[in-house]
Length: 388
Image (cartoon, rainbow, N blue to C red; front, side, top):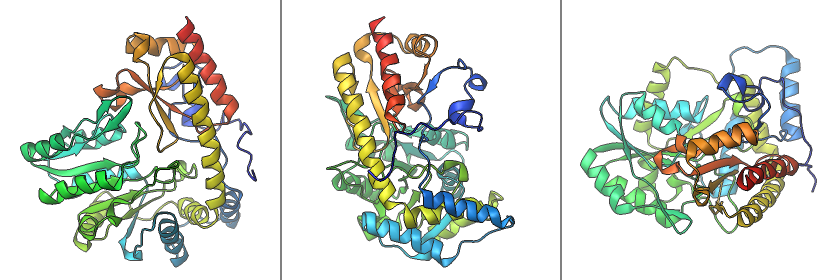
């Protein structure tokens, strides 16, 4: 490989949420963190160089993206996913969750119903409930070690609750599903039938493993494009979350105006200068880096799979994302007791599945986007808990 992902970078004392905030979050200071979804790999050299060049300029006033920025974003999605877009479709925001909150406020009223599919990324529920909307849950179906969608329940709950907005997670965090074109089409048709707007969070779209393929929801059907907003960001793909840059594709001009009006009402204007610089550089030069990274992550997933099989726990097939979803129900240990064992005996900070909804009670999410030695150390610590 051209890139060495085995290098262990010391992230302590850098203000890292992942590595420096254990005690602030009520955890032992010496835990090994594999909880939050950021990677322990340095960005591609071209991204680092672009940021250094910008820093050396020494002036950081208000910034607007050049045409080259939009060209880089559009080319990435066209070449990787066959998704053709227009520059005017792209609205810039400082993050996906921020954009979801804007969408909730822009397209629904207080008391309106918003649907999601738990177990799912927990900020989805927060932006619904914190904005005084009603949360409607179309629980994913877990059967024989795999997740699927209950389409009858999906449509029934839309009708019963008069759902106005559906937040789709594609690929799905934390269960690792990459929804097929058929599954996405079925959801899209139901939403069209009942006038439900779709907000599709596709932040993990670049982490999809063979033979699976990511399908941009709006690319399936012009009617879907007209009834959706597509939320994307280089934050997960290139480990740029701290620079806060997201690109929201909105084809429908009426929806786009309402979203932009909501964005302006939030008081936000120009994007972070370094977010613009890093996003353009990453999409322009980061392709080969990402391709090799995915190979490395596939090796990490295999390591977890072999460990899980030997340990008698179940790894849910990871079709996408760099987050593995493990079923610990075979141990027969209650959730809080297992959390205590992980934190205080194994000194391991994992993501408790309960935060994604009650459906995640016997599951734990582990971030495998780290050098293999770190991952192997974490697996050994889990093994200690199981043996005890």
